Length: 296
Image 1 (cartoon, rainbow, N blue to C red):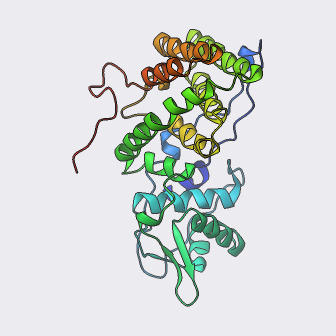
Image 2: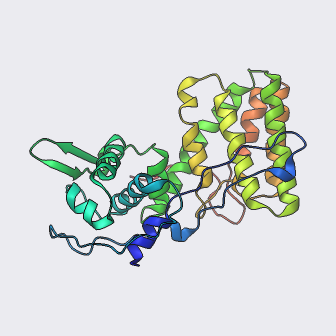
Image 3: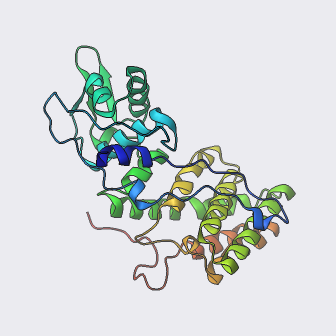
């Protein structure tokens, strides 16, 4: 089996399971975490010639999202990585032959990529790769593809700076929404994270952390901020590079999360905002503490 075929079949992510309720900390179910091999090392098509060649047969047990989702993942990674450059023509028949999928799978996959701004389809012109300026850079898939491709450093820095803007404000606003159910849910997430730290379970910690931050944004009472919750979730799934204090399971991180919950319970927006800023401060071993202005 070719490397490209293997990458295509292993690139898809498993779906997340639900969160554990109170008292169910040992039953916090999550799918297997994706490995680096699932997302990087995507080879380019060997030639820009019309005949791209055929791949080896896929095994029947391909895991993940199905052929449609796998093709979206594969083509998306290749576009974002630059393997398929701007204005590159994408001929459906060639894609179908290359990846051994039906016309329907190719057509639906290209529609998804078009909705993300990665490709454009025009009569008498065909489907072509669009420049970076046209991409929906807030799309969670594009965030992930950039974060595990050649642009990984820029993507992680941009996410860090964006979170620094979004989340302290969300924490301040959330303090004005004293919903008992939300308060309990946030407390549950902190308890799950504490349990995960004790067990050395980084995966469970990261998933509970993502739930915490997503929920906090959703209860801020600002619908525009709520639409950005997916960005924060994506940022929390991106590992490596300069990272925020919430992205490693430590006692200090737990303390900051707990302070946020306490501030929300007290209706103290300023304290909640301050605790979030401390949480988003990068680790001591990283020189830069907060996102700093850059020279242009």
